[in-house]
Image 1 (spheres, helix red, strand yellow):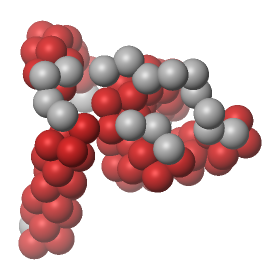
Image 2 (cartoon, helix red, strand yellow):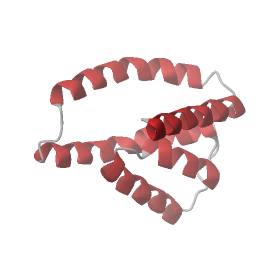
Image 3 (cartoon, one colour):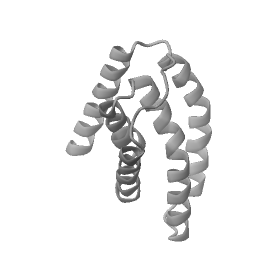
Image 4 (cartoon, helix red, strand yellow):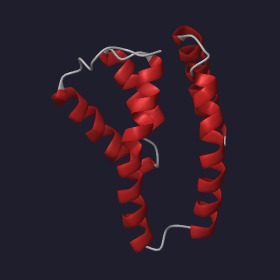
Length: 123
């Protein structure tokens, strides 16, 4: 699943990152909902877009956690338990992702986003 060198203009990447940052701070979303679709539209394959988003979200999440932590908005016990589960689960998800075709992965991703959207709208 290895792709060639990145061909997306740095200014476009910065704009995608800025949008993800604003939405992360505002809504708690950014990587999967903003970066992945934007990177795919910009020309990255689904696999690379998802992996790149995960790598980029680390500093975004750290800054958000610090900012919201200072405002006493973080449930630290819940965050630790979520992180522990995620650290276990991400390995399996990454292994599975590499076994799926770009098309199937994009369809699964899109279906997941639709399910999340419907759930949030009817909640």
